[in-house]
Image (cartoon, rainbow, N blue to C red; front, side):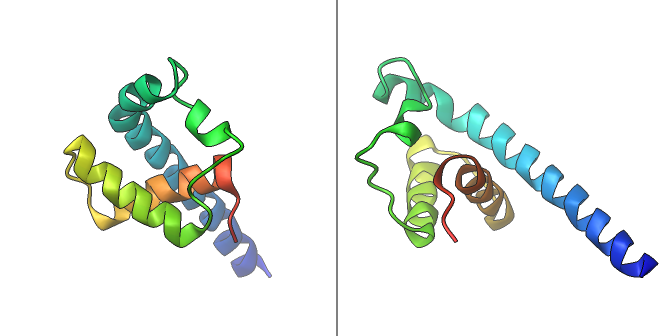
Length: 94
């Protein structure tokens, strides 16, 4: 029982770290461009009703595209962190 609690707590901690890392990466590399596309509101792209990203696979592709467009060098894990942050915050895909 104690092992399950430790594993669960460790998973929560790791999840929080990945979320924070994804948010920081996103905010550093993406907000300026998104603000210019969203009329000054960088988060408007995620809240609009006519979202072009309609699945988790689509979100992964969009993040990969934006990584190239923003000319950042993210590892696969960093891209995954950003996808996880965006999905848990804005998209909620399963």
